[in-house]
Length: 379
Image 1 (cartoon, helix red, strand yellow):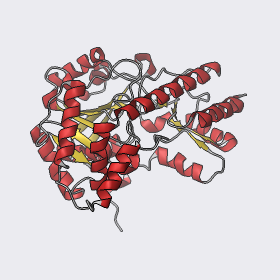
Image 2 (image 1 turned 135 degrees about the horizontal axis):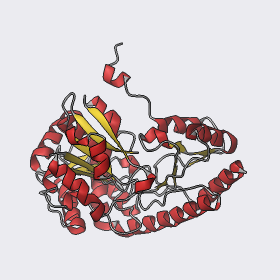
Image 3 (image 1 turned 60 degrees about the vertical axis):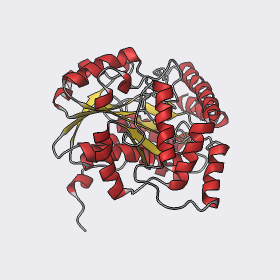
């Protein structure tokens, strides 16, 4: 059977490789996957159960249930003072990942250049490639606190791109960007007429300062697609529910792809999401508090071990320098010797070399044991 050249060009996910290695071993503590150890708030689960008991198992509107789109628009208004029309400017998808994929297919023509701030979520580059576009990596580094800069955009050719993709709070570094940091990025996007694809899935997991959406900056709402969802902040990964916010013409284009591929997001999950927005903010606050406690613990342990580690301020990852020059060799040796899974930073692209991604979305007892094992491995 012939496999398309586009698919052949994309290697398997480096994260999945380490995940599969852990399945072959006993007594493994995985700090490799971005999976919250919390369970979705009970109220949201009850809403999902209730929807099933009432037999609500049919398709919804392609764009998502009206009540959910209204709740999402209201949240954006409350949180960021950004008004989106729930009928024309909100699209509900099967996870934020689907929203991002749909956006690439809606906005990228063959040969279009798409600038991607890196290190970054592993799906951006393959998504652009599958759409026929040319990914243009824009490296960020620890010297700039892993923040995207206008200088890096200019130096690496983003002026000739059609679109710019970035994610803050960032996976894998945990970096955040303030309003002041985002202003030169917005100016660059306006100057070069870039469509901005802003993945804000970790916005509610910001520990120092408030999250700023780039869509709030002057002249940006009309050129930005904001992605968000319920997987991370609400610990609803398996329910697969995300959304996009954008001007009407962008949502119409994205929905054209969405309606032919997914039809509609899972109905049960949409009922859970409405409840999550209405009733589960306290649960999010509690989970964020727990993540922050873990973040401080992991950073302090790496500091005690003498490992240089960037001070992550968001998401649920830290990004220490690898104790060995070859980060992949270190990750494999650590897994083999001590049963601790971490991910080498180079799987996240330019700027990730020589680092490790360590997730603290796991319980404190396991984190303590994992850090003890890492320290023992280094002795």
